Image (tube, rainbow, N blue to C red; front, side, top):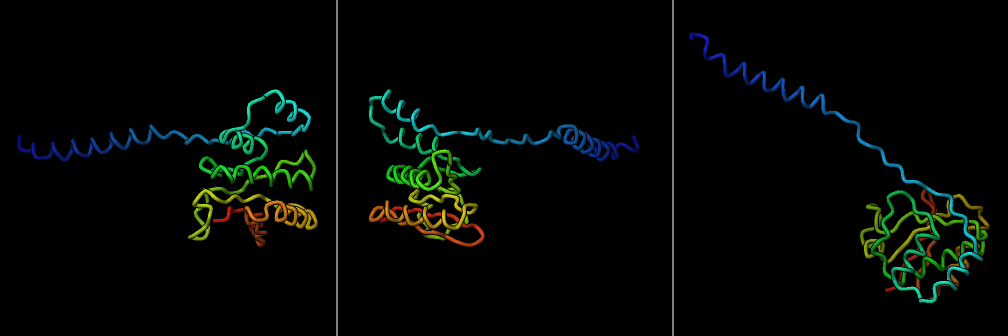
Amino acid sequence: MKHLYLVAPILAILAIFAVYFLIQTNKRPVPHYEPKHEEVIFDAEEYLRQLKKDHRPFGKSGVHRLLLKRTRQKAGVYLESLEPALDTIGLEIVNVYHSVMGFEYVPVITSGNDWPYHAKKSKHYENKALDFRIKFLLPEEKKSIVDLATKKLEGRARVIWEKGEAEHLHVELFE
């Protein structure tokens, strides 16, 4: 009975070791998710057949799904709340890429409303801007894409060729 005062600290130490042991045995690896990038080959004839088969006109969600289907998206890109007009403009940019690069080329959207490093008052945060990858294209292809996109979207959207390390084609809706 004279060492009864030691029981509480010993039980506390045992409890700490028990919790430590439970934590150590519960270490599971964090699952790694890698999205599957299927190689999509665009077939213009099949696309036209599908349009003729579906007699109903595209709604907002149909145009958005078509934009997602006709492009690839960089990992982490958020495009779910885009302005409906931007979906249409995005498809026109896809058409510009196909005019310059051919129908087999699938453009990559590198940013929607997902990147925390855009300028403070960027249209990206209002879901009114998209970025397309042009970084790995030839200089004459880049120039053709920018010129054709600027001409095609005149009065409806601003097209900016942002150069530098993160070179891309920035497309934003006017106010």
